Amino acid sequence: MVDKPTYNGLFENSKKLAERVSDLERKLLIQSNTWITKDAGRLFSELFNKAGDIILLHKMGENNQPGTILMANPAAIRILGYSEDELNEMTLNDLIEKETKEFNQDELHFKEILKFERILLNKDRQRLFVEVHTHEFKQDEEQLAFTIIYDVTDRRLMLEALRVSEGKYKRLVESLSNEYIFYSHNKDGMITYISPSIEKVLGYSQEEASRNYKEFLTPHEMNIKSLEHSEQSIKGMVQPPFMNELYHRDGSTRIFYNTEIPVFDEKGEVIAVEGISKDITEWKKI
View 1: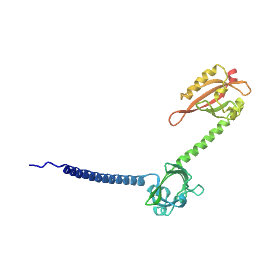
View 2: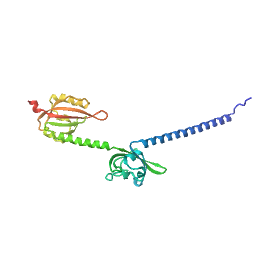
View 3: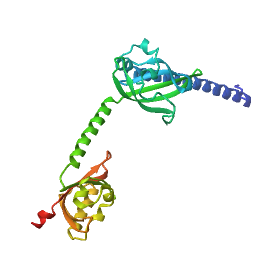
View 4: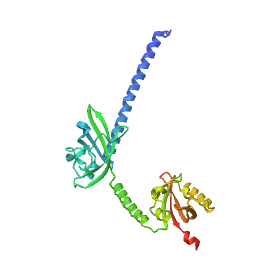
């Protein structure tokens, strides 16, 4: 006859089973962490060695100044022109052009990341406009920093070329005859730019004209239609040229022929309306 299991026996068996399950879970967790660690190491190695941007691992010295560079990825060696041994004897400040500010903690912080722009000099003394992102961390009680440096030289050169180009167009606009006015207004109708010719054409200074464009409109019936066109421009719909009648500063009126276009932001939303107006008062009389 088989003895019935006692309560204590069942308890002991359950306890042993729970211990085995717990032991199995620990082994699985250790194995899982090993996999995660291996994957993290592999991913870091891929990022470090194959990234096209400069990546540096360096110490942090006194007064939060960057210390000696410990590791530099292949892109850093290629872009900066220094060997790894040479970089291991340098700091980030050694690479920064001396006329620009050195690394300091007064820069913009965002979620423990320090971000700033500088000019670096490579081994051939060529200037590189860069954007630096640095994250500090502790490793075995030592303060280290992981820095990614993006080369933005092409972007800076493009912006400079754009600035020069805009300057040329501005000079062209400001040297045009007395018949034209160039303007820009926001979605609320407030004029944000108006060419200096406004003084010759309508008698207002640029400061006086920096108000809502509707304030210049006379009660003439043609302005009912012109307002419709302007409202459609604000909604993003390109309009055909239209005429309107505006007040001169001396109280007289002038008739203008207008061409407007909506200006969109990166999201495709209208942020402004730009236009050119030509005084056709005399032509209209003829």
